[in-house]
Structure formats: structure tokens, C-alpha cells
Image 1 (cartoon, helix red, strand yellow):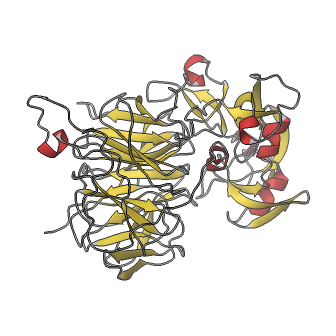
Image 2 (cartoon, helix red, strand yellow):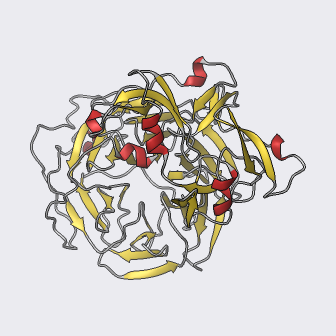
Image 3 (cartoon, rainbow, N blue to C red):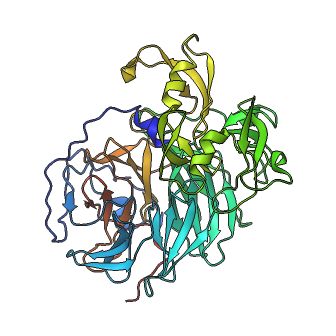
Length: 503
């Protein structure tokens, strides 16, 4: 739902002058605001000296390394390469000195990217709702898992599993890197996006794109991950409200935890009720793909055509009417037209491609045209759709009331994108559009500003692996504005990786 949340923030995306040199960065002492890492006498904590004496923050002018890609995420391999997808959908490796190597061609668009323990690369293909595995030795690629809902951030554990956030549903899936089998382990997280383990791989952190929240899950002695809990908030964010399905009965209409999409409250194997998409399969009993079907959407009858999710799934009657579905039966990404309005074939929260004419914004205004402020509202859009309340839109420069999602509580810094954890257990997150990086040293601790680079999209950050100039005590942060990375000299290492390069 990035289109909607972008409207909540006004910022100056200008980028300051930066040093484009390739020499390893010198330590930036930043602005001396006091030793933010001086924890005093902590006794025998098992933490290193570096953890007990963190560098002062903020870092005022991190070095920028240019000549990379504008990819949303990247990883470091055993050859000293920054590995990512370029603007043409090719996976490339680029050394610290700028030498480029083609790893695999024609892979498409990607988000979360990471090295598996065996040296293969896994990335989230948000265009096709899949995880893709690439073998750098051969250049070959294969779909590891499909049928996901906007897979975004991910991390890889030493247990052979990929842990990936489904932003469309607000869930976390555990995917076997060998078989592709997926298991739901966490839900109810608004705009689940960045994912990172803590040291020891028995803690998991998930950031909220929109809510300004970092959730934490812990691995129990029984091998089961605990329910996500609020671990920290950015300044200005409020704690999430109780999910609808915690207080309303099964069958109640609800907004999916991804922040958009309409579902129903259902029981789950996780021990708590969830808001899930309930697809109308009965309307397509005995039918074939493309046959007409009659069903309901947002409580109203409508006629559509039977379709399957992509890749092939169960036949069902979608929420969108037939004239929205028919122009986009083949692929997403193509132009289309509905009743004279130009559109673009886009994936919906139901996992199919329909003609999106961008009418959700007009609907968000029209449903509140005659309403009172604070009155409940429903935006009945087939791509997104959400429940909310009619709120004053003056801060957006718009007259009247607009139907705002009930879950928009993160403030201007709340669109958390990238997430990572250092060897000390401190959590770091980047904020979309405003160019800030935050750090939390403990649960419910006050957020510390690491740096403010004023870039409009700093989606992910990773520690170097000590090979080819990428230093282990420096965290590198992608800058999609110009295909560079910022080098943040923190003097501490990351939480550890499943992939261990050969010495």
C-alpha cells in the first residue's frame, strides 16, 4: 500500500554532497551528543567491549559509494561482490572497486535479497509473488516458493529456512530453502516489511511499513516462534490498536494486516484469530477458467469470471467485475482500459491481475462526502480496499474528509523499510521518504537517530563480510535515488549470517 502511505509524508528528497571515493571509510565521529552507548557497569553481560562503548550518534556525513544498482536490496558474496538486481532485471555482482560481473540474466524485479548457507542467492520477486533461488556458479534460477502475498523483506537462518514477510497480508512465512515448503509462523503485523534475526538466530524482528513499529518474535524451546509483540516504536508512532478479529466474531469483515485488502475473521493454527482472504470457490464449482460466475463483493452482488491465482491455484470468483479481470488475464504490467478509463494491469490482494484505473483515491474521498468526521467508512476498491474512518485531509492539502485506514499510526517516520540487527542486539531501521536511520538498544527504549541522509528511498542495510573492502564493522545502506550505498562506520559487526565465506 506504498501509494497510500506516500501521501502521508511531505519531505525534501534532496541529497547532500557526498564523497564518491572507493577507499575504505574512515571512522566518522559524528556530532558529539554524549556517548549514547555508555551503559555503565553492566556486570558480566557477555557483551564485547565495543558493545559496551558504542560510537556516539548521530553520524552526520556517512560516505557514499557510487556505481552500484538501484535495487531495493542486496547481499555480499564470498568473492567480495555486492550482489543485486540491476534496472534490467539481471543479477550482477559489483566489487568494491567497481568491477561488474553478470551472474544471471532476465530475472525481473526483486525486493529482499540474501545469501543462503550454500552460496546460492534467494530474492523476493514482488511482481510474481514468489521467492526465487539463483545459483551463481551456473547462472541458473528457479522458483523456490509461490503464491505469496507481496513478499518483501527476508533473512536466512542457519536452520536452512528463509524467513520472509508478506507485506500484503502482514504475515511472516518460514520457507524451506530446499523444498520450498512454506509455514506461517506470525501474523497481525501491519505492513510487515523488513526482517532480521538477532544474534544467535533465536530472535526475529519485523518492521512495519506504515505503523512505525518493530515487532519481535522469540524461538521457544519447543521450536515454535512466539506471537509477534511490539518491541519498539519510532518517534511519533502510537502502539497498534487491537486487531478487529481479536474483538469481533469469526466471519466479520476486516482489513488485512498488510494495511489494505478486505477479508474475514477466521480461526487459525497460531492460537489467535486472523483476518484472511476468503475466496469464493463455490461460485466456480464445475466451471472452467474464464467461465462467468456470480458472487458478492463488499456485500453487494456482482458478475465476474472464474480465475486462478498466479501461479496456478484454486479456481475462484474474484471480487472484481468481469470487465476489470478480462483485460489482464495473461500478465501484470500491461496497459488496459475499463469503461473508457486508462489503467494498468496490477496484482490485487486476492493474487490475480486486474485493470487498475487508480480510482481508489477518488473513492476514499467520495465515501466521506456526506459523512461526519470519525464516521466509519469502507473503500470498496478491487485492487486495494480498506476499512477506516473519515478524517480531515487538510494536512494533505485536500478539502473535506477522506477515508483513512484505521491502522495509519506511524507518523512521518513510520514507513520502516530496511531492518537489521548488530552483534550487540541493537536493532536498526530505515524510514522511507525521510531518509532517516533509527536504532533501539532495548525493548520499548527511546529511538536513537543514527543518521539523516535525506535520501527518498533507503530500503535496506547490511553489514560487510570483510571480503574485498566491504568491512565487517561498517553497515552499508542502499540508496535507490542514485544507485549507491552509504557506508555507516559503527565499529561493531552484524548479528551474523548463515552464509560463511571460505577463508
